[in-house]
Amino acid sequence: MILRSLFLLVLVLSVAAGTDVRAGPATRPDPAGAVIVVVDGLGASYVYPEYSARALDGAPIGKAVLFNLTGSGGRVVDVRVPVPETTKSHSVLVTGNSSVNPQYLSTTIFDAARQRGYLCLAVLQRGDAMSMLQEMDAVLYLSDNAMRGAEPTPSFRESAPISLRPLFQEWQNRFDEYSAPQGVAGYAGYDAWGLDGAAAVVRNLTGRPFLMLVNVGAVDSAGHNLGINGYLQTVAALDAPLGNLAEACRENNVLLVVTADHGMCFPSLKGKGGHSAEKFAARLESLRVPLVFFGPGVEELNLGGNWSEVDIAPTVLDMLNLSEPEKLSWEGQRIPLKKSHDSQALGVPEGAANYRGERLVANRTPDLTAKTAPPMGGMKKAVGVVIILIINLVGAAVIVWIWRKE
Image 1 (tube, helix red, strand yellow):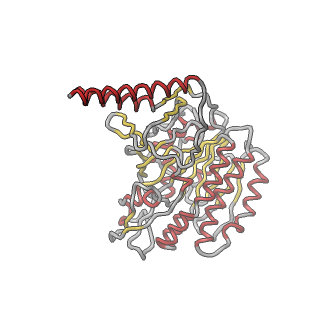
Image 2 (cartoon, one colour):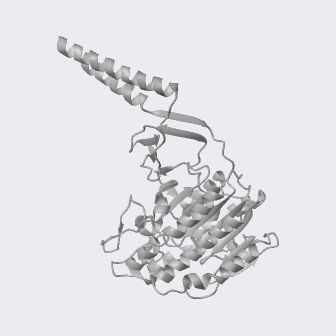
Image 3 (tube, one colour):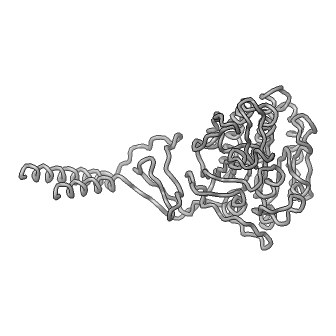
């Protein structure tokens, strides 16, 4: 019994000595702005490692690798949309209200941002009613849902900076360059145009905070028109332009949020997909969407629990330190992704989990991008090493002495 107790004491002291937690008040400035990317039709089942997608007939469906979506940031593992339909879902996203009428948005996160002097912008490829366009100071949008239909149209209020006009005109002119190829390449280019255009706005818009909504629509079209293989290829093609946009946001201290308006379900391995029809609408492949926050003030974690699209609006305002408008009556709650303190834990084993009550809040996963830290010097480091060695040596000696005596 004594032997076991001493062994446990040495083990606990050794582990405790190897874990170093440092914390202090966060000192970072507020984000310079935020970009919310809505990938039309991107189901979490096809990109999250926690899930597997199946067709209606039970056939397993593969995945697409999106490292720039799942490789870092604050990732919410289970988020579901109230209604898997594009126009309605976009309205829920900006109001936090599942019963919102898309034709009459009432109060939105853009109203809250504008009260604090934010510029409201959008790059919209499909699915939005006129009420959404009217929320913006400047918008570049396509007026139909066809892959090869109308050209992008820029629109501005007087409040929009003059510098945005030539920039939006440039990206209007570049649309054909991106979307002209046939097949999957054209679908991929359609999405890349929206994401690269948003990155150009982030890099060229300085001096005034902004909130920008970006909707890219080719993933949804690929699911409807190209079947499973074309869908997964179009999803995978998002990785490079998402990385470009994420880098632009990092360079400019801008918050980036990536999510979807609904997922996609397939009847079989050879069938074409859907999401809002009765046979598809109740499936998790249609309802569960990705949600990842990147940038200033975001905890790097995988967040458990059950969350809804109505939670996104209050979380975005919380991340931007914006107060809620008086007339904004959302149903959701703030998702706990905001970093209130700068903290660093060293020596914590991979797989360690953090619970709040019975809810899994976060689990530690390997950082694939981390570099090895340089050796630390100084008297404190040397003393710490010596103390650890002494504890282990004395403990081992005591254990051997007791074993021999018995």
